[in-house]
Image 1 (cartoon, one colour):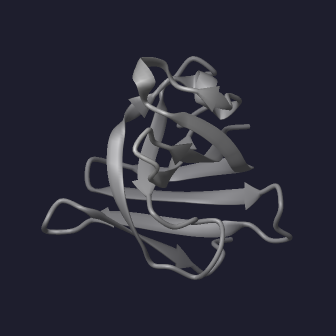
Image 2 (cartoon, rainbow, N blue to C red):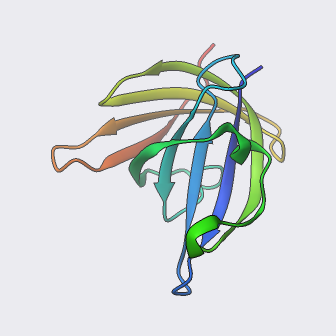
Length: 126
């Protein structure tokens, strides 16, 4: 089953943000769809502002530690079984069964006119 992971990325300048990464399918070598957020999407009701980043290597599903090139380090905050319902350059929809939560969460994200993304939590899709 595809997975997603939420990492806390500490940067060398002392700042931090969250990297939310999704396996798009069952292929373990496929690159991860990745979003950068200031707040945790696995907690709270949103909406959350996000930035779509370049896809990341699948090793990040399990990796914690220093990043090459003096880019800081990452710590895993949560992981989940994930179902990706749709993904395009302007839209994203997925379900995450977080390891720390009793019920799955259903997310939709859309690119706004200024190019940023807005992630929303929706009622659980059946």
